[in-house]
Image: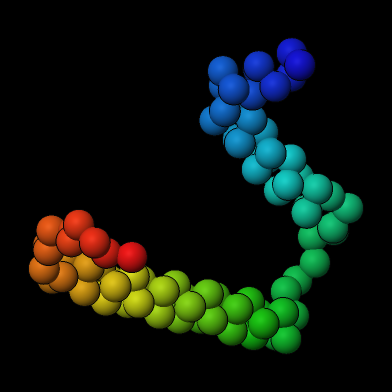
Length: 81
């Protein structure tokens, strides 16, 4: 119970700790090796895909927001079912 209270009081410290722990675990044990061309290519393709998905999501969200804003505000009918 005390751990939950600490997380509730200091959520950003816990998020930062989790991020640092994830970075440390992801890089632990990996020696300093030169990047391979296939690894660089995979990283570039992955970055491109993430950016494309983000742009598509932002486009769709802005389209939905514009439709929502442009929708006329009609009062509810008393006998709507």
